[in-house]
Length: 87
Image (cartoon, rainbow, N blue to C red):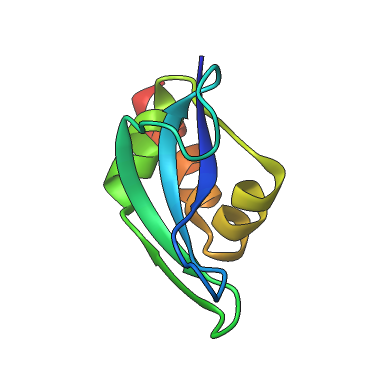
């Protein structure tokens, strides 16, 4: 099973990548693909929306924090609208 989760990058300041990763991998393990970036201090996010939608359509589950980030960026609304168009 694949999850969308945060992977820490910053050494002194907490900066995270949003990655698609196998659930059996550890937090700093090898990821399948980098799909975004999150800086909680500056409150900045960069999301590769087509890649995120691809993984969500294939059944990837976002963690709680990533789900909140995607909800704030309204990516989940795009997923629902794409599913309606497909069906």
